[in-house]
Amino acid sequence: MTATAASSPPGAARKRAPDETLDLRRRPRRLRRSAAIRGMVRETRLSPEGLVYPLFVCEGEGVRREVPSMPGVYQLSVDQAVAETAAAAGDGVRSVLLFGLPHDEDKDEIGSPADDPGAPVQAAIRAIKDETPDVLVVTDVCLCEYTSHGHCGIVDGDVIVNDATVDRLARTAVSHAEAGADVVAPSDMMDGRVGAIREALDAARFADVAIMSYAAKYCSAYYGPFRDAADSAPAFGDRRTHQMDPANVEEALREVALDLEEGADIVMVKPALHYLDVIARVKEEFGCPTAAYHVSGEYAMLKAAARNGWLDEERAMREVLTAITRAGADIVITYYARVAARLLG
Ligand code: PBG
Ligand code: ZN
Image 1 (cartoon, rainbow, N blue to C red):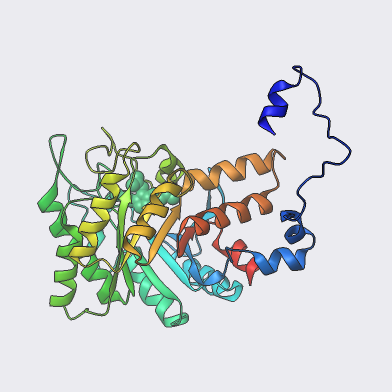
Image 2: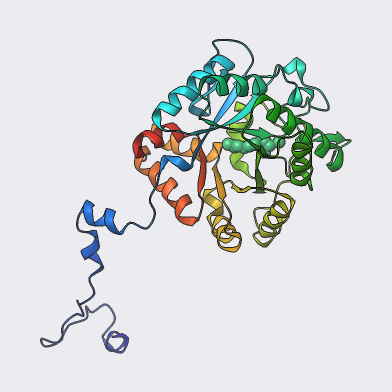
């Protein structure tokens, strides 16, 4: 065929000799003819079971404040977080991921509200477990929502001090477990924190509390809206000395290996869409439960385009979830969890 094409004059359509036929024994289109046959041969099937729904829990009562850059996402006081969890469970969502928003005046250099049993996250865990005990409660373990400077750890000058931070994170994880969390999810990217958290949980008799580690968390521009939602933007500098360089994938595999050695039960890649290759490699090389976080900026992009009428939001959302799952994620953390569960349930 190439030879014929090459010998044809440029621009001329290739003419077929009368006795020459196309090889139509193979017709891939046969399997695309109807919804039924497409469904039958579909390789990636979505289910609400793997969805995790992030919630931002703030102080107060009756508070439901929409995040401007994340339409449909709210800062919720504990009572509202409980109601939202129950509503999400009604839609088929079986797991929530909690972030805490303490009062500004309670934040300090060491992030004291992080392990305060009376802080919003701890109160929300107890209240959600009371109201909807079957919903799996996962908690984000980091200090950036609780420190006055907005950094993920203890700061000395402009350095984030690893080991002192790890100690604070372990205490935070234990305080979440004491409140009734099922899974703790360290998102800080300090070295050795998974091992320290495992040890602290076990010592406090929480051997059954699982760790979902943000193992390959990249230093991404796509966390922008989240930092509005959680009021956790760093007051100076950035997160490049702990979060990963977007250029690296081998390093992600080393991070995952370390976290698994230290006792992670589930590993996460974050963000999701620009890191599908990372998800695929992690799943392929380790075969362990793998989560991907479709982050705030990825959500905001879709919302913005949809609001302008530039794309069909439902189709785009389905495509996103399909792509992340096809890449190898078993678990997808997404602000679309409720909408997706309703659609898939
Ligand atoms: C806290 C944390 C962040 C996100 C999850 N946990 C922000 C950050 O690291 O700056 C981002 C989630 C999102 O963008 O949706 N360390
Ligand atoms: Zn952080």
